[in-house]
Length: 432
Ligand code: 5AD
Ligand code: SF4
Image 1 (cartoon, helix red, strand yellow):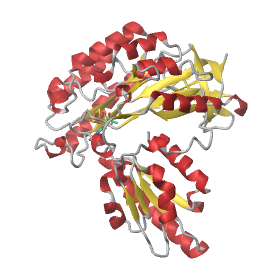
Image 2 (image 1 turned 120 degrees about the horizontal axis):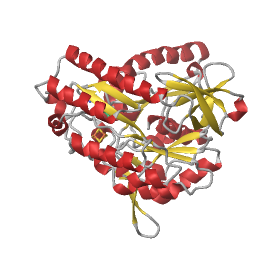
Image 3 (image 1 turned 90 degrees about the vertical axis):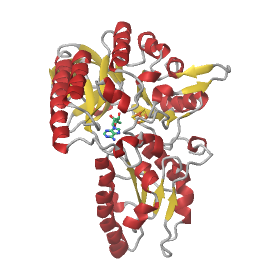
Image 4 (image 1 turned 45 degrees about the vertical axis):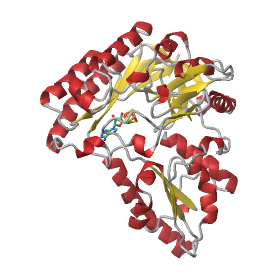
């Protein structure tokens, strides 16, 4: 979602004359779009800001120009003016719900007077109604935010506080954005939301739509060949969405469905409001509908009070599901969340041991999934030049990165690829 938001910030600023650049030292403005989900991500902001301080000073001393520095995203939302206090060279702090106001903020900055602006409101206006249309094409695979915020309040998570209450964009606005993306050459769209499958809206016919209905509608847009959505919560996995995986060829056979833990005791303490068995039932149903579906998840180890037995339940669940890929994290206490004040915090050493045991299993499952793709044919959307000269990379239907030796003009095309080599994190192949 931060990638999407960053693109939208660029859209907002381009009418004022700004252009995106890869050369940070040449920039007239640098926006750090930040993440607050775990402590490590949040800490990185201050080390990055330290480096930017040097660049800003050089721009001023050697080139006599000002480099504006803005902090956006969830750290901005959570820390507000604390950022300009700790890093007084920051000019602007702007939250995820107010970045459409960036042009106004930039216009208000007076470098001589060293004004610093903080805008972390949760305004009544909705930013999507104020952002200009996309100012530049998004490439073969594009993101589209359909839903933001979260009302679930998992006890470890800052998202409900930094992103605010659940909000669904209107179906017509989403479809219009998807049509523009398709018209500018995007073939794949990933629908985004902190709780994407909680998306709901009222269509023009007055009927209430869920994400499954929206996906069926979007699949009919001319030029859209692939759809994905992320991230989902098990409680919102309704049957219409699950059957869309069977009925809609454009909906890719891949689902990222976080479970976080395998112990019902820990799931309850996490306020997930589902059991391990509820989750496994969803997986069974999905596999009944689409036997080859690739599954991915998120896991937290070392949640307060997690015993060896609880952790063994996580291992057992992973063993049962057999993931194609997964993300796993050590529990990180986040300010203001209920779990952070729990007395039963787990020792860092224990967290590290559990994380490496879990990752060993998940890595083995991912490798097995990838190995299974050897010698098969799959359609890959070629997305970009890869590291090595003459090589392109794209994504398989199952979200694997696939490398192929091919000329640049194949970027943006859907190609039949035969898989010739499989690795832990990627595949290689040749055009059929
Ligand atoms: N500590 C560790 N991991 C977390 N996540 C969210 N909050 C925390 C936390 N406090 C993980 C969850 C979520 C993913 C986006 O980040 O697994 O699904
Ligand atoms: Fe955080 Fe996801 Fe839980 Fe919402 S559903 S509180 S975003 S982990």
